[in-house]
Amino acid sequence: MEEHKVLLDKRKKYRPSLPCPKDKTSLLHHCIKNAVLFVEGAEGHPEKAWNADLYKCPSCDNLVLTDFGNIPEWTLENTPDLQGFLDERKKHGAAGGDPPVIVYLWQFEGRVAA
Ligand SMILES: [Zn+2]
Image 1 (cartoon, rainbow, N blue to C red):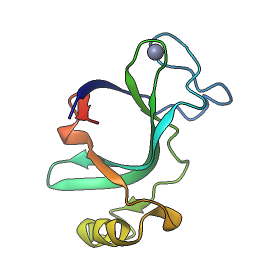
Image 2: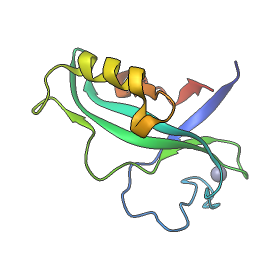
Image 3: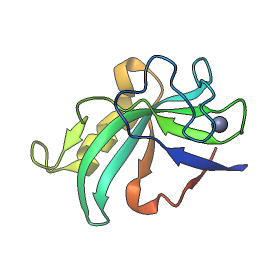
Image 4: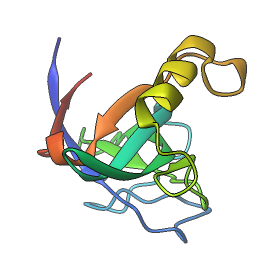
């Protein structure tokens, strides 16, 4: 496993060129993983889970987690059982695709294994 630096870009209005937050290179066509579930909140108190995609910048080689959905996939308010939701997602994947990679904000130190 190789460690890459991961940049987080939660802006909603970055289309259509999807620029790298570091050097503005377009990340289009450089998606390396669809269906990343990004869990927000604090450890022991998750609040929302978002669907995002992981890209690799062809210029600076950083990974960029971006392209967040407009509506969270899961919220504490609507479905208190996060683990149940995650288990379901792992079983079935998003829209029949691969099971998601799950990233927790409180474990997010700018690096993930990829
Ligand atoms: Zn870049």
